[in-house]
Amino acid sequence: MSRYLLMILTAVVMIGAAELAHAQATTDAIAMVPPQDNNGLVVFPSVTLKADGELQVRSIMDRGEGFVLGSMPLAAGTHENVRLSLRFKPMVNSVLAVVVEDGEVVYEREIEVRGN
Image 1 (tube, rainbow, N blue to C red):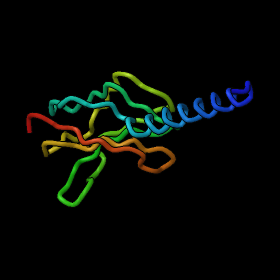
Image 2 (cartoon, rainbow, N blue to C red):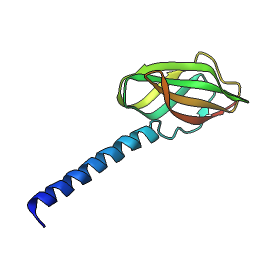
Image 3 (cartoon, helix red, strand yellow):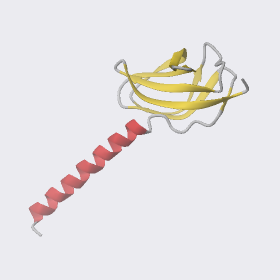
Image 4 (cartoon, rainbow, N blue to C red):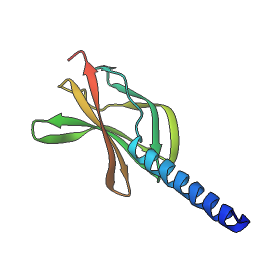
């Protein structure tokens, strides 16, 4: 195998790995969140944003998402142990965590709430 062909194959593999890592960051923007007590606080083990944006917790209604219970701005990157205070306590057994970047929802994860 020629040296140039080996360099090209190496570059292709590296590009593919970078694209996979980029896609993984989008699909796992919010790490698995354990069930939360209904005490006005949601703790996220890890939140990853590709661009500056906002983390929101929204109520869940019968016909989709409801209003924002709490939110906070986050810079691009990975944030550990994110603690988001809610302005309103949820009235149901689950809420929707949402990552918004450039005004668009890029990720959602349902979170169980105990003690309702």
